[in-house]
Amino acid sequence: SICVDERRDKIFAWLAAPDHQPSHTSAQKKTQPDTGLWFVRGETFKAWRDLPHSTLWLHGKMGSGKTIICSTLVNELFLPNGRDPLPAVAYFYFTNKQTGTNVAVRSLINQLSLTMTSDIPAAVESLYSQHSEGRQSPTLGTLISTLKSLIASIPHLYIVLDALEECLDRNELLRLIQEIHGFGSLHLLATSREELDITDTWSPEVKEKVETSLMNGAHGMFRWVPCQLDALGKCHTSAAVEAALQSLPRTLYETYDNIFLNIQEADRQSALKVLQWLAFSVRATSLAETVEILATNPNMAGACLFNPNERLLNPQEVLIICSSLVTIENTSRYLPCTTNRAQVRLAHFSVKEYLTLGHVQGGCASMFHFNQKMANTFIAETCLAYLSQFNQPFYNHGIRHLNYPLSQYAAEHWTHHARSSGCSSDTLQWLIMALLHSKDAMYTSWIELHDPDGALIRSFHNYRMGGPLYYTSLAGLEIPLLLLLARGVEANAHGGRCGSALQAAASKGHKEIVQLLLEHGANANAFGGQFGTALQAAASCSDMEII
Image 1 (cartoon, rainbow, N blue to C red):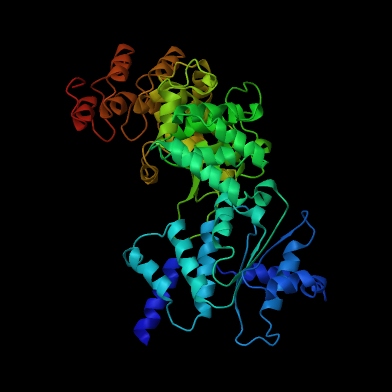
Image 2 (cartoon, rainbow, N blue to C red):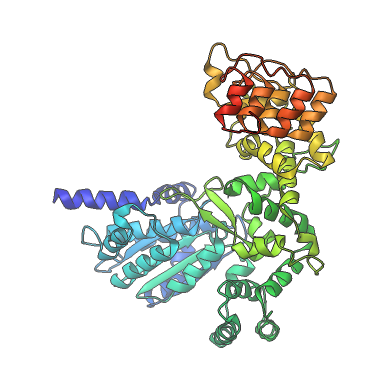
C-alpha cells in the first residue's frame, strides 16, 4: 500500500545506508577476463560456500589483488549454480580509512532488508520505533543487534567484507566479526592485509580466565575493565596474557600509570598535545583537526610552525598514540564517518581528573601532568602557530576549511585560550604580536576567517575594520594590550563595531583593560560606534564598576 511504501522509504532514509554498489562496480572495471577464477573454482572457496556456519579470511600484501578477487567471488555468489532458492548476499568494501563500522553495519542491514519478502523486516521496524520513530540516531550496539536478528531470520546467507585494515574504527569491526561469525546460517568471508590485531584471537580457555580475573578485579569500577582489555589485547601469547592477569593494577589510577608508561617515547609529546587539547578545548575536536594539531609546533621559533609533512598518514593512529585514553565517534546521524565528522574525545572524565588534579604529579608518568593554565597556553600557541601559515590574504589563497581543518577553530577561539592562560608565556606573547600587525596579510586572514565583531558587520558600507588594539581590548588581553601601547599604538584609534578600543573593552566588562586605556589617554567622551559613548557601552553589559 501507499502508506507502507511511504513508511518503508522513511525508515530507509533514516537508516542512511551508503550505496554499496559503486565500490563493487569500480573493482569489477579493473578485472581482466578470468581474474580470480582460480580462487572461486578452488576447494577452499567451495568448502566455505557449501559448509554451514563457515568463516574464511583471505589475506595478502598490499596490491596483491584481494579486492579484485573479492569482487569476483561476490559475483559468483549471485549465480544460481543449481541452488534453489538463491541465497542472500550482502557485501561491503572499506575503500578508505574514513569509513567506519557503523556505516558498514547500516549498509548490511539495508542490503539484507531488500532480500526479504516483507516490505519492512520486523527487526528494522523495531529499530526505527525504539528510536522515537527516527528522531534519534541508533548506536552501533543497536545496529549490530538488528543485524544479528536479520541474520537469524535468513536461512542461507553470505556476508563479504573487503579490506578490514581500511576501517576507521578497526577494533569495533573486529568485535563485530567475533560477534556474528558462526551466527545463524551465516557464511562470513573477510579480506585484509595480515596485521596483528586482525590475526589475534584468544582460545576459549584464555577468554574464560580473562573474564574471571576482570570480574573479580573490577570492584565496581566500570572504566577499569575496558582499560585492562586494551592492555591484554597487546599480549601476543597465552603465557603473556596469564602473566598480565597476575599483575593487574588494583585501582583506576594505577591503570592509567601503566597506560602512560607504555606509551612509546617517540609518541609521548604527541599524546600530551592531544590530551591537553581535548581536556580544555572550547568544543569537541574532529579527527581532521587533531591531525593538524599534531603537525603544528609553536615552539619552533624561526622554523616552520606548521609542517604538512608531519600530518599523520593514517589519522586512526591517534588511537595508537593515546592508547585507551581517547575514543573516536561519528557525529553524523546519517552520513558516513569521515575525518571531519569523526570526533576525538577523552575516553572518560577520569582521564582529565587523573592528569589535572595532581594524581600524576611526582609519579612515574609526571611528564603528562598539566593544569588549566598550561593547557590553555598550549592551545592558544597552537592556534596562533597554525594561523601563521596564512601569510597571503585568505580570500586570495585558495584555502578552504576542508584543506586546513583547524583554521576556523584557531581563528575563532585563540583569544579565549590566550585570555584563560593569562598570556604570561614568552612564546605566546611573541606569537600574538606576530599576528597583530594590521598591515600584515596574516592579520587580515585572521579577520577574514573570523571577525570578532561578527561577519555581517563587514557588509555595512561604512564599516571600518578595527586595529590590533581594538581587537585586543575586545578580547580582554591585558599583556598584549600593554605591549601594543608600549610600541606607540594610538589609544584613541577609530574602527570596529564599537568605534574604539575603550568602548570595545567597556562593552565586554573588561575593567582592567578600560583602566589601562584611560591611563594611556583614551578619551572617555569620544562619540561613535554601536553604543555612542564608552559610558553607554559599559551600561550595555550592566557593569556598575566600569560605569
